[in-house]
Length: 260
Image (tube, rainbow, N blue to C red; front, side):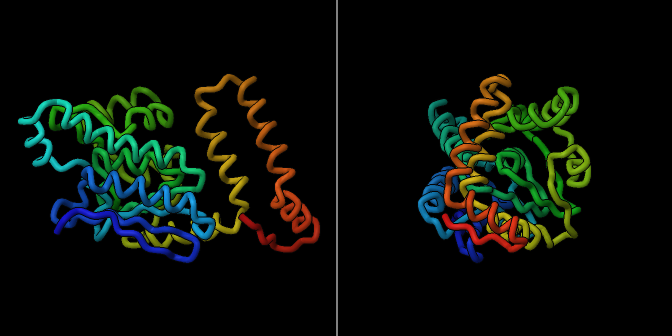
C-alpha cells in the first residue's frame, strides 16, 4: 500500500492519520505535501478549530524510510535536500498554523516522527510509547526541527544524550520533563487527544491563535518586544466580539458560546 495521510472530521477537529503500515508509518514527500494541504484547508475552514495528528495502528511514526534514503544516496544531493525541504515545510506549517495541533502517539515516535510530535502544541502519548532520535544510530543528524525543539525544552546535557547516543525515552519520563502533556493507557492516546481537542474547541479561537503566536515568538524576543506584542494581542482580543462574550458569560456564571 502506498503511504498516505488520511483525513477525517471528529466534530470540530480534523484528524490526520499517518498511514504507511508496511513501513511503520514512515514519512515521505507525498505525506509532507498532503500535510501542508490539509492544514491550509483547515485554516480556511471555520468549522475546524483543532487538528490531531496520529498514526495508523500501534505505531505513531518510524521516521524516514531508510530504503528510500539509501536510494537517494545514488542521486545528486539536491534530491534529498528537496525532500527535507518538504518535511520542513510541513513542520513550519504546523508551528505557524493558528489553531491548536495535538499529537496522539502510540508505540514508537522515531527520528522525524519524534520531530513531528515535538512540532505540535500538545503531545498525548500512551504509557508504552517510546520516543527516540535515531539519527546518530545510522550516522545521520536530525531534521524536522528536532534539535530546535529539544534544545528549547530540555537541558543541553539531556538533549546531547538523546541526539548523540540515540537513547530511547518513554512517555512518562517526557511527561516528568514537561514535554508530554498527558499519558494514557496503551490504545487510549487518540481518545484522550480528541477529548483535549473538544475542550480547546470550546475556547475562543482568536485567543488561542494569539497564545500560540506569543508562545512561538517568546524565545526569540526580548522582554520589551514580548511585552509590546502581548499588549497588541490583548487589546485586539478585548475588542473582538468573543471578548465581550467571554467576559459577560463569566460574570453571569454561564458557559460562553464563542463565534469564529
